[in-house]
Length: 419
Ligand code: GTP
Image 1 (cartoon, helix red, strand yellow):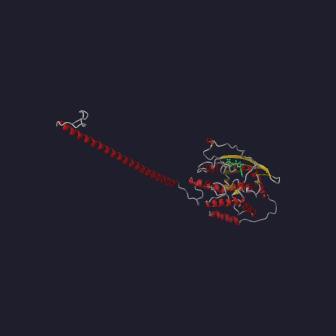
Image 2 (cartoon, helix red, strand yellow):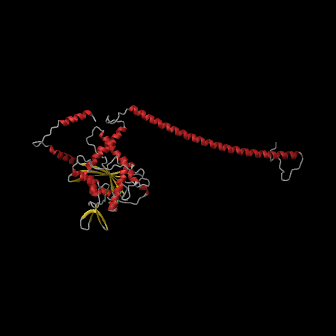
Image 3 (cartoon, helix red, strand yellow):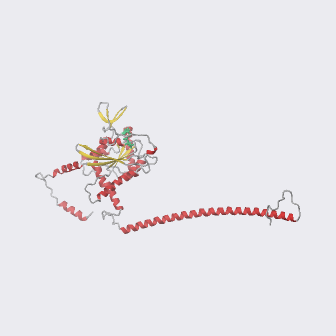
């Protein structure tokens, strides 16, 4: 982009002299230096598990890392006062070691997900947690001392799909759509031993079609350009199994031929967790731990976090690269905000006026109605009084003229006030 930098790079390329060394210099040892340093420092990996309760999340994590990271759970019947109202986020960390290599593993669980009658906001706390981790990293990067930043960002999110055999549920689609720009999404079909091989194949096709239809970006493995053919083939092999149909079991059972394996025993045989012919557990483990852990971390840092960071900084008015972002002028920004605010106020004022007019109209029509009723009653009473007066006048004339009153029409003087 920068013509000066491009010219400099071109000139550097021209000046490169290619020589074969005749003696030992030592930089061939660089990978070993790197290896020793990394091993001394140790590694960390943060994985989030999302899925409805009882889909085997804890079992799978224990099976993956061959450790009882999750202690066995005590299942109690639900009581109304202990049912949580929202999805909670719980994280467990453990230092595990294999052949002298230390790994700090953090598993972030999301208990309560999908447990409510209305799961509309189930993803809220999950997205919030992922963003908080990005924010904490951004804050740490902006501090004066950036030497030992602890990376608590989520490097992979294993999303558990219920083995319904149909297709993705609306909740799955909604959650994946909210998460895919923020984490490396790895969909897995939970408890795959409950489906037959054919059902798993068909279910996988439908899930992939749904994912494509809804433009959900799942983790796709490393870019190929720099890899050798063997690595590319290995990656293709792993990726061809997505969404991984997994089975979890962290205890050993004995097979019919006397082998001790991790698996689940059924009346008709044993499902072996570590057997690629039985499920995709091995491929998932290979991807998460053996081959793609660094790729997952790099993708989190270089793509997901970078996008989040630049969106956040741009929203705050920080211009990064003048050729990409326009300089944000504070005065212009303030003016924009003011006009937006004014528009909002005008809208509110109009709405209030309308409500006021409507209320006045209602009141007026009520008043008019009661006025008419009053007038009608008044008229009725007046008519009645007029009739009584006419009656009395007539009687008065009769009394004065000395004519006797008709029987039944005699009245006692004083009951009416005669004029
Ligand atoms: P919450 O902690 O409630 O979210 O549950 P969870 O998703 O962690 O499930 P958990 O690992 O506790 O497993 C729930 C039950 O499913 C247990 O009885 C497990 O033995 C069983 N289970 C776990 N994995 C599998 C599996 O792959 N297949 C089958 N059939 N059952 C499994």
